[in-house]
Length: 266
Length: 299
Image 1 (cartoon, one colour):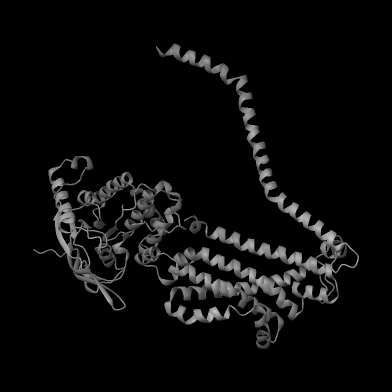
Image 2 (cartoon, each protein chain N blue to C red):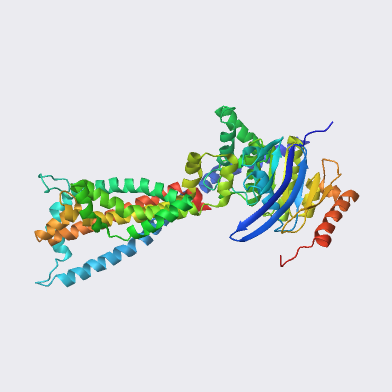
């Protein structure tokens, strides 16, 4: 029995053209993701991993190839592939509640009543422990809290795939660890399919079922895909001495710093 | 075991809660209230006293300069004496253009309200178009850049020819004067909407109308209000000049009429009102803007 892949990135090429100059950013990217899997894409900065996420989100179109979600091609953005942006991208003139509601109102306009939508917004704010700040504006809450609200906004759209674009990149180390734990707990609880961009090796190994390692650009490819055989739920402290955790970490580090070292001039 | 302990606690607590407690709570309660008022009064004084002093000095200077016999302009004391009737009875109406200042000012304000409202709607709409579409910008921007340099009054003969009436012509002049800064500032605001907000809108799949109302207008609001403030200032500048030419009821023609009848004091009074109202119009837009953009500005 062959199960159809849930999300399939099929022979994706991406070239940017500016005037006469064309730059090939991504070359022949093939990847399948099963439902409920947590997949991380890791690579040096400038390798095109954010471009890849934007292609999956539909914010950028692939030059060649395409993205299949449940066997349907997707090439425009939509709430079924909600994105958590690196810099939270909350609308500053709306309160926390209104920011989440923006998506909810749009996605569930016909399927939920007004009261149900309200309850759904609050439910999602509760999931990220931000219900207490529902009437605050983004400028009044901390960076970690903003990112929590960004996650709630994405979750509230009930996406088929949750796309995380370096979601913890702009946070300090302690807040980052705290939020990583929250995301792990949410993944455990809701069973979302998640595709995450990161440049943090520990983060990738801690959170992912599979780590997709990308070679340096231009013409970045998938260099290697690593399965992370750690059982869930995972505990940060216990993993620090876990042999297979360390082995995975070693593999990724070797890939990034020995075989595909970042070339500054590129 | 615990009984004696409780007893002793109660014994200690009882005297503390009686007489001295009342005095202790009363005194600090009064002090902050008085202090608060004192502080408010101080703040107000700091803001009000310096301009009052400067104003008094200027009036004194003016009085001294214009007091001499044969000076061309009246001193403030004579201005007040000659315009007392106009100051204290702004509501009289003896038909024609012989009306109190209230009626002149309200006629001018009505024209500005009409012209400026049209300019605000058209300016935001055109600015959005120019800010959003590269082709609209390429096509329209050079045109705007040329048209906006035409002085307001230069439009008046043309609009009189087109409308054959003073009232719509004056409104058109207001419109054409104030629309450019609104267009240009709105366009800049729209062009500066961060890509992130556009991405959010795309993921949520807002339709163009929702995008306009929920993302564009709030995101560009600080720019739009800058344009509106410049616009209202310019329209108030233009209305006085336009009314001098079209005649009828209005503060502009009131000034011109006063000049023709050599009532210099009345001109000075009218200028004072024009300045105050121009200032209030500007503050009004600023306050509305502050209220509307409270979220965006905080970022």
